Image (tube, rainbow, N blue to C red; front, side, top):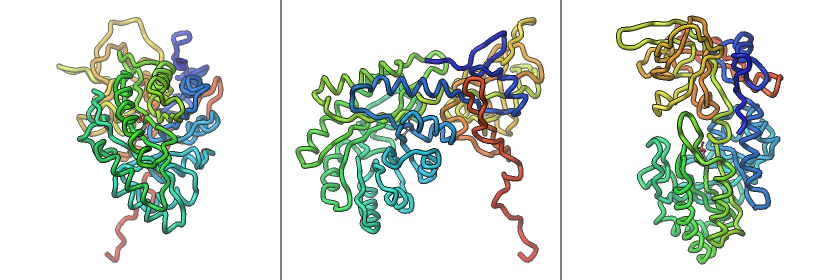
Length: 422
Ligand SMILES: *Cc1c(COP(=O)(O)O)cnc(C)c1O
């Protein structure tokens, strides 16, 4: 795996560009992505699929920036989307409807219609009600919708409860025990064409065994629904492969893919087309967030380094208690280390980015928060009326502005003060 963010002469670089130069020129907080890291992660999937009928759909929700999407379009990726907005982004980046899988538990009629009118995109259906709804919308549009059912294989993946999705108790997928009947129902619906089966068991999964367990259950079902007359052309095993944030030891991508594909072969299903829907493992370690120290605030219990990035820019620590490595952009070594909590300016105690980290810091220093390429900017908000950060994509010595820093004026777009006559 390419580490695109390394030190050269005691200066953190994004590929060949000093991070301090980027912060100087584009301001902070600043998301910086490495094209080499994105490419390397995608190739790890694609190379391991060579010679097999397999396809990689990037889960757009992890990072939906158009520049990032266009890197994947050029590499030949497909896309897993969960909304009409994501569909529009994929098309704007040059993606093709044929390479799109439409997931999500609550697709609206409008979203279904747009996707149907474009044609080609496969719907992952998550309930009987949604199946009936899609059949209805497709009949009105005079189209046949390709579908697969997202089945919940009820396997425990031992990850954070908010990102575990394959258990009976989650809102996702058709319950395993109902899946056969739901496929039978789909067979009777005139405007649907069954093309495959899908599951997605969670996120930040660092072991392969839950996938193998899920696959065994899914294959059991595949045999049953094919005996009922459905044709399962593809098996989508979802995304969820974890990355290293701190001390996790996830399998590397190539080994993960090979193990999965070999498992299908061992079970006598090498003829199936296998789809992957990775998000985090494609983009997570391809991004850093640069932030500047505004104030140092020593205290009786804790020392705080108050920086200009906050929970609105990166909510993973607050939301999932997530650990992100934080490094000084230009490390100092002339004084003893002091332990700091790295916190933002937002008025919430939950506004922290890292806890108990040893540093030698001075006001104005730059920090790099690592592994923020997935679910970083994508979940950012304007809380506390903070404009969203700029995003850059670095390619060697070239810098591309992937998203301009949001302006205060733009924050108020579409809002109206109360007129005098009310
Ligand atoms: C979120 C999601 C993914 C991607 O998950 P990662 O953990 O980022 O790999 C894939 N498929 C579906 C249906 C999802 O909801």
